[in-house]
Amino acid sequence: TEKKYILAIESSCDDTSAAVLCNTEVLSNVVATQEIHRQYGGVVPELASRAHQQNIVPVVHQALAKANIDKKQLSAIAFTRGPGLMGSLLVGTSFAKSLALGLDIPLIEVNHMEAHILAHFIKDQDTQRPEFPFLGMTISGGHTQIVQVNNYFEMKVLGETLDDAVGEAFDKSAKLMGLPYPGGPLVDKYAREGNPKAYPFPKPKVEGLNFSFSGLKTSILYFLQRETQKNADFVQENIKDICASVQHTILEILMDKLKLAVKQTGIKRVAIGGGVAANSGIRSRLKEAEETMGWKTYIPKFAYCTDNAAMVGIVGYLKFLEEDFTDQSAAAKARYAI
Ligand code: KG4
Ligand code: ZN
Image 1 (tube, rainbow, N blue to C red):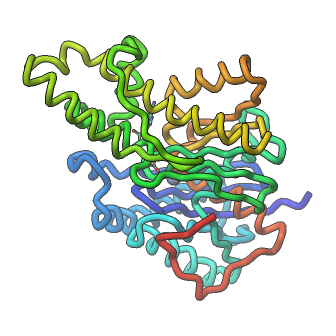
Image 2: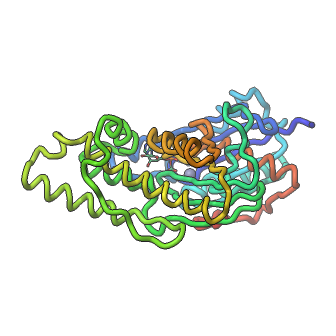
Image 3: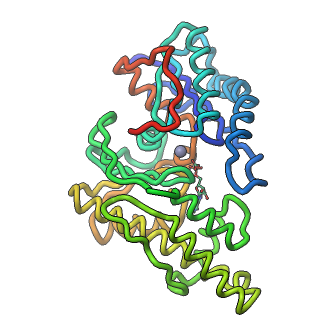
């Protein structure tokens, strides 16, 4: 096959990223993570937008330099059109449009949620590509969604969160325990040494394949308030058991829905992605499901789980093959369904 070079740009939330792909192979994938949000304990949209403005040109230059590609060799520019924060999306969208116009090459819009799922089809990974149809579950600080994937561009959302994303549930619980943002990885770390059954938290009652995590946060808040009234050092003394119990509840919620999705569709191939896919608990649950229920499970390389432009690039390449190009009038979309 002919070599096509795609420059991809991702700026939907708080990571500014640019990647260069040669067909399905990633030549570079540069991510500038915005540290500014840490001190606020969450992403501040206005600051994210400003940081993208500062980062976008150097990040694109680095991506081209690392790939050892001149911009004149590019076949197309792919960019995340949505969903995400409007002020963040606008930076990547405007930049991608201008560059495509300047180079006189096609522009390709990418849906961020489709990109998380198609990240499995990036070439240089140890794991196998999932066969169609499969179930995709994207779990991160911004999203919680189960999708039936019949083909590259034939996806159907089966369920999603009605309130907080699963990563938010981790981060907000961690914050209640006084852990720094983002607390997900720390909860994971402590949970490994704690008793997951120490403190039972209620699971939400949500019909079908949708999720809800805001109730869990509230019950953790009340639980911690009650216990610290009795013993001011309760959290410090029991951090491992609390984290293990919180994580256990979150994993039960995720696995219950996955099992239901498998039951409803008859599809036993389950591919997960998003930052929470780094969680050691979800990884062992999926392994267990392979052994006990005959599932086949897939997790992309971590760099392609968290927000990154390489996943935008693989969608860009697949759309390039279909000549599915975007008009210069395309506007960023904060809400953008699969
Ligand atoms: O995909 P991502 O980097 O950014 C977006 O939200 O788009 O995901 C970040 C989220 C954060 O909520 C973070 O706490 C969570 O993923 N996370 C984890 C782990 N590593 C990252 N949550 C639980 N366990 C982990 N090991
Ligand atoms: Zn994302």
